[in-house]
Length: 240
Image 1 (cartoon, rainbow, N blue to C red):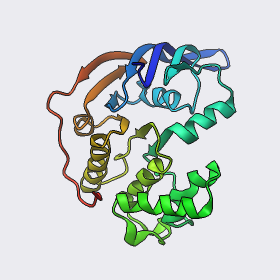
Image 2: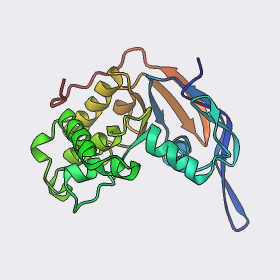
Image 3: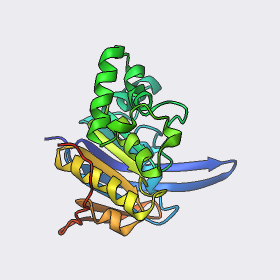
């Protein structure tokens, strides 16, 4: 069975005038469907660059990238956008919500871009909002929410297209420890339900909640290890 994601000697080099900076070098690994993988490393290690390439937000300058068994290096921008819209969900540290839109409007936005009919996208968005325990905030503008609530809205938005994989880039970085624990608990629960999760973090307690930790140092994989005793994060509000 093909891995959901597979890379072969993936590389990324940034060139500014005559200066070249190696961000990633010889990254070879795979992610199976249903895994919860944490990519960790110090600032500047290349972990966010790797996530951007895996999430089809950027392109490598070398090596090969396979998604669902297909090499996609030479895909057009439109084909990359189609993968992002249909196969990938994103959760970012800064939430990336539109503050003047309601929770419902923010969560439904990907479905609107996909061309889903209004009645169906509202129904699906409400189901995702209920899933993360925010039904009582459906009509609130997101500017009125706490940081933890905003990140839960971002998770609902990431789920609304039923993606193959969810990428979370420092999702607890702007949150206090309690709110961060709630968000991390949601991600664990999603993984328990079969969703593939890839989380980029520099926090050890976040990485220990995953099932596998990939350590990136100076643009290379330093260590790739299974988590033997996963740290289970208690959280409230997730709808059964």
